[in-house]
Length: 206
Picture 1: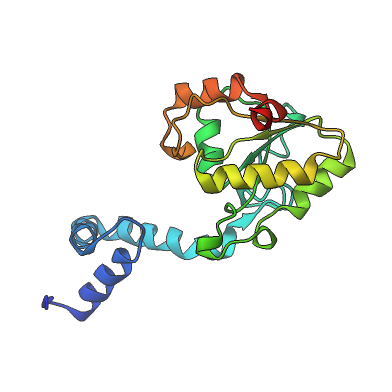
Picture 2: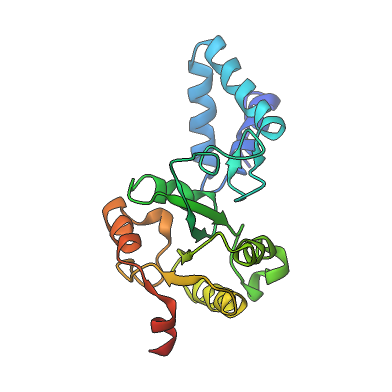
């Protein structure tokens, strides 16, 4: 059992260690780094963390992270509102935006169908996607989900749900390796995969 010189110091390490991908050793380095910083800088860091749960909300249109009811992407009149890119999470929005090759809007599902993890369609933002297809203003929906079994299952489920509506359904090209996740794909490959998207009907037929 590790003994720390301070109870507060130990609590800070434990909190940092709860973050994804952070173990006790990494948490220890982070806390020590903060203590080496100027006090004003550390307080500013803490203040930003405190503000997150109160000031960050989800866009009522696309479910992306925002500080206002409608995010800056949905409210941007220069974006093509007839094209919708369906992604798993906010990280994927950031990854696609960094390619600077996509100018449409997004729809964040908030996850993918994964029975083994207890995640079903009712737990995802699917009803709002169907509503957008029903409204008629969207002409194309791009499925940009990870090329995993769960991702493919989710795309197939959505395709079946959307097939009866007058909207083109396409999928990103397989420039992304099978089993790969969008956030870990380099920007050039991801950008090309979106630009070279193919009709989903053709994928189903193969």
